[in-house]
Image 1 (spheres, rainbow, N blue to C red):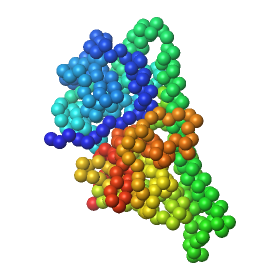
Image 2: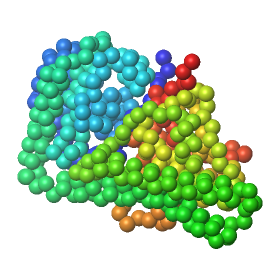
Image 3: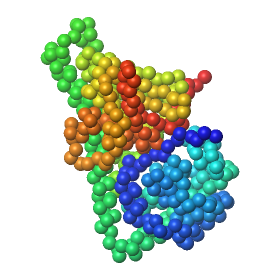
Image 4: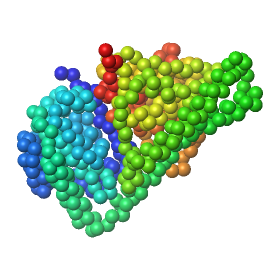
Length: 422
């Protein structure tokens, strides 16, 4: 069977999370007797043949304690625990084949063909999640009881106490390194949020200035188009303001300042309406520069599952970059490729950017960086934000070009899209 193209999601504070993992968890402690007993207890609670206390590293997971499993490590994209550490809540999969997100997961499609998984994240006192305590079976189970889940969470808490006690003993109680990690995470988080706010604010101000120029007669336009242009520009200002307001509300309710993490708020939303909402705020500025913009949603994509506000922000950033640095007509496209991945792309007839430029965009945000100075080959803020958001959704950002056009696209797992209902 061909291996699935599913990829693992990255937390928004992944750089800091990995630093905390390497600071607190001693890699020489594989086979830790305390963690071994925790794994055995987890297997007993759920009646499973296997259970592990996992530590999720950059590209793999290893086991602090395990039972019923011979492997010492597995690739991260083969690890369901990579998904479990994206939340403070337990991940409960009574039957993986009934979950669109996991039915094509490598650990489900290939050996050991996991059908039941329940995992509680190991959340350190700093707020960072280093791994999970999980029970696994190759047969589905009934949904576990609340009492069983609570006991699993208690086991995860005991692992936290154990790990932090070991770290304190190794460091002599000195927590300066951990405090530095937390401080850096908070600074990067505040910088990231600042850039998120600036993106819709840039569009809002751009449309406001456009309206002022239009009112002053500085923009030449046929009389019959003037009123329509004015209404669209006003709608764009309102749309950008509403988006900015929603982002602020999300930051208030769905962030963890302690660990510098922005949580995804996942939902299902219609593809066609979503793409149109992305270009609406930017369209007046594109029209004023004598260019066109359009959207296309393929028949294979009826709706999308994800954080609508974040995906909106990512695509908006790419469209804004295309409007600023590209040439010719801009197209925003959603389609499902032969490998079943969901592609959200922005193309135009300009020279575009290279894969190397996208790779260089992967670095922590820093407070004090400005939209105009954080340039990746002249492509501005869009690439770092879009890449971060794609990774949060378990995907990646990539670019390409043909003889006719160039594009930047977010490649997301196929389970994030659905076909039309018949």
